[in-house]
Length: 499
Image (cartoon, rainbow, N blue to C red; front, side, top):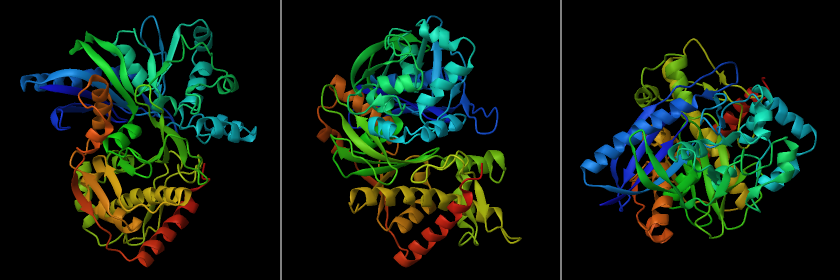
């Protein structure tokens, strides 16, 4: 039985899933890794710990799959996107901790780019707003602040990449240094029209422009780029054939292959993407224009994206920061134990606000507290905040495109929370639909790899495998939904500009 191994490197955990030709799961494994918060606004990962964790789960999934008679004929990679790592090409060792996409240390530099009038230039070339979220300013920070890093980079001794590049480099024992178009489009250094690193932007951020050294080679999202070298329990000779940033992979895995189809992923953050066809679409409502994927030598396909920085991470904060719950699984029962939030509103702007506000100085805010407020009210307000933030993005998308979406496909861990999914349907006023396979990020990477090695022949073959698992239809009146959204937007105004 031929199968595809998918490595799904998230923000808080690494997972590995082996899929069969029907898109079903043969085996899977998942381990969390450490989050580091060295100072206010900084978020870091240990790239070596990530590599070891990803290898451990891969070895576990491979072992179980092989016992079931599976033969792994291809490997797909999907990853937390903008997280930035720089390593020594000779030793393969990172020169500093990886700077996570949530990290805000370059906010001041980003403001200087805005003040200098570069907003239109960067948006026109990259489809992005200027924000510390993206990789380019993180790379510049590492070159500027790690001793001798800039000199080493100019001598061709260093390699930069997002987490896909890091895994590829390690899996091939340094033979391949590459990234795909979807991850490159999240760096603020990549021209989404020419599909190349942009000379003007590299010069603007003072980043060495020798593509053979510091910057990874840009490849398609589906196509064989190398083979595993055989290390840490991962066998040698597996073709590395699919690469996509996690949100683009989820869009592909959800079967959203034609213009106008949209999905929302509920993970550490929330990310809503709408497929817009083979030409980039410029947003008037602060959505991002991003490369969705490129299959082989075909034309690239594009998407509009809205980014919510803190979603599941707010639940983690209730667990780890406040100790209100011991396990994330307790959220549904706790939130459902009260009929409403009792007037409490929670804006979880721990890393600023993303779409459509793009306010780097916003901070987390809880409003409406009284002596009658309990942890159940705060738990319910947390779930509602996830839905409200996603609705902000959805409304921007609808305003941008003029399309009336009839349903929203959803995936990610929080789709297991029926209270959240029902509230999301109520606020949006359309059905929310979950697929039979909720691990759509890993599945998308598997599909991209499988297309390259012949497991699947066409996108139509893949779309035909998508099946509904559950659907939530709206029950709230539109007047009530609009009243609640208005109240939410008042709370957002209080969170803005705090830092």
